[in-house]
Length: 178
Image (cartoon, rainbow, N blue to C red; front, side, top):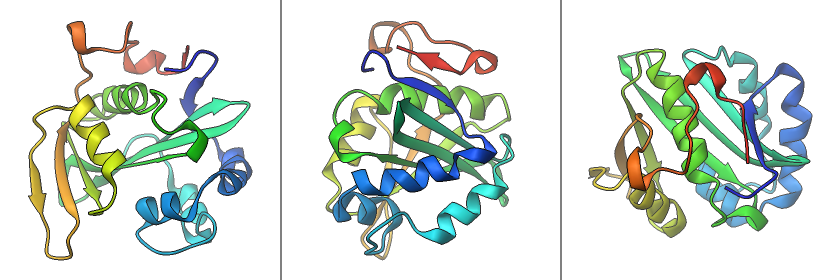
């Protein structure tokens, strides 16, 4: 991960920081995350952040002064061992090593709450997300859905050994700085 970047849990006062991230996102990045054409992070999404309980829904921020990435999971009530995963990275920070540490940290938190796998829906043109999944969770099975998106199934466990990102901190120490 890029030196000087910190990962921490979302706090109630962070909506303004996430809203400000809109100015650092292209229409393409917004479309790949929210699956609709939008010029900014949708208000409905910002409103939904009020439901972050750090158990069934977790949101992590990668900060370098401003928010440079948001990663989150939301537990599936019908399958409580599964949660939907979503990541949004500011354009200037894409392909700079944020995905692995965010995924490992989010995975450790999910495991501590009984979530053993993530699902991630990826649009057909989102090669960066596909590459990140294959790089950070190789062998993750893909199931194609009717609307053309690909749903990946990913383990929540952090990578270990030679494929890890360096020292990994357990869930109770998830605030990381590099």
